[in-house]
Length: 144
Image (cartoon, rainbow, N blue to C red):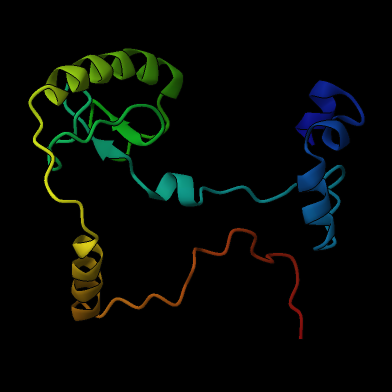
């Protein structure tokens, strides 16, 4: 693997021992065999839309910067430079949020939105039995 060629023998054991153990439990020695890599949860979330102030257009006073944002260019642009985004838009979002906070009226805090969400989800027929996508599929062999 390239990691060993670039960093020298033993790099995988030193830098990503947990991943080495995880793959070993599936009978894969990542020091010798290539592994399938594909986008999972991080790439599926798409990122939130923001305006130039770092505020989401659909939820008033919700400010976002960094990896959770699709960027100023729109949704599903997560492969951008998150560090640069958080510095530029984090500063802008912080300044704008501080200014907006002066005018925010706080209402009664409830958890009613959870019941509403559950009802809408149920009415839409969305099942909730899956916790998340399977992150490490067995693509090498079948087990009986």
